[in-house]
Image (cartoon, rainbow, N blue to C red; front, side, top):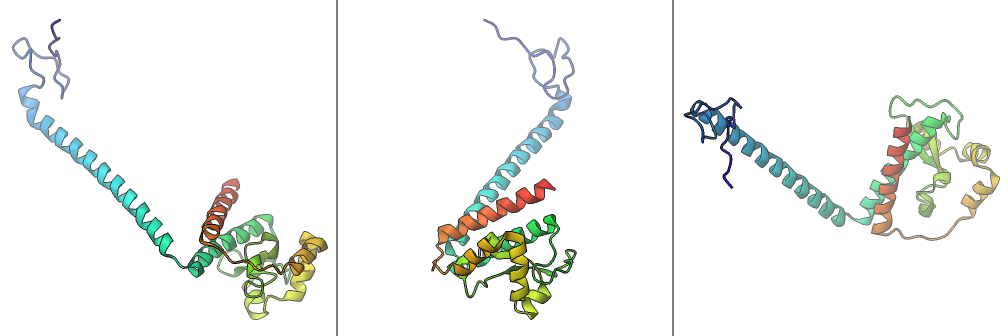
Length: 197
């Protein structure tokens, strides 16, 4: 079977004359066609280079994550947990858990304050019942304002759950996998919360 000869220029799409039959490109289009081919090849190479860079960055990020100490992983997980707590309470319209004052969400005046501190009860550092939005003043300068915190916490989650927090004295040693999973969990929960608004 004979192959059909092209009837149009591959570059400009103009019809070939009878003499040009059998060509693929008009002689006048060759320079433009070659320039377009070169540009296309460069775009493909640029896409491949960027894809390779993305893979290398992901590998580097994974390696850096593997080299982190437990304390660094705790800090990472705590950062994302605290961001979730602040957003959860901001969306719920909660005031400061200990003073009852309206919180200033516009700046950096709100902490994720723990009822039982992370120093005294590190096993509760990622317990959502143990952490609520609190003014920096109460959290830092009034040592958490624990008495008023407890009163408001009972009103918010109930006496039974507060006593469960107070009586929970288990010892827990955080593992790398747990901390990485906690960070991922709260990154996801925060995205979900922000997506809901």
